[in-house]
Length: 136
Length: 136
Image 1: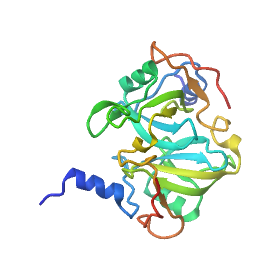
Image 2: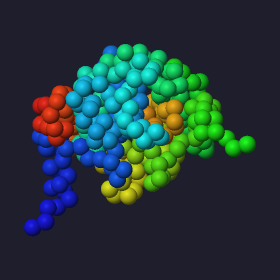
Image 3: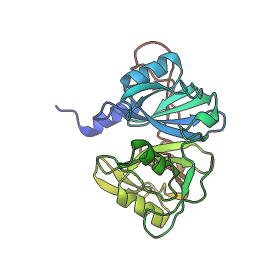
């Protein structure tokens, strides 16, 4: 009998084995938060090798979609990320990492302490709207 | 003179106008955290309409890739997410939302208080490895 989509889904959600699911490009999104204060720092992408290197070395490695190469976070900026904990979500198609950050100002390549430095005001009107004052 | 990739990039990073960049499928990933404690709850996807509805109503709307429809978070579970703040990242290709959650146990469709309930141990060895004890 074929396995139902529900059974496959429950298998992924309740599995005791980490079986990351990469997208059509072989990538999985990774959210990284600062272990010290819980701030969300960035979302970057990993291929299988970047994920393997992260697990093995304990330091964050990502896949650069623009440069098409693996990138050890902080290699040039000094803002290394030592992984404290690595989690996955119910569908195993997202990674969440908590990291000790060597230098917060090097977190974003713009020099800010997080990539999420701009706030969008809520309310009616066009989606393309002026930001509130930028932070970071 | 053609605009250099660096100039385009700086324009996106320092722009004062929110101009979200959707992927080839017309989607943008959205990280949602609990405004009360900063916990990362989930990563879901938005199309332009889901983002518009979220901004306009102040309640989280996502795009379900499996059901191919817009989904107002909590519509069936009761776990509504009232947006406190919406941010974007340097590249404007990720959304980060801080939300007041009506019912944390309905956050994950598995009944858990976050989608990130499983921790992956660090260290050498195959990537497909047993989880640490599941939480949530």
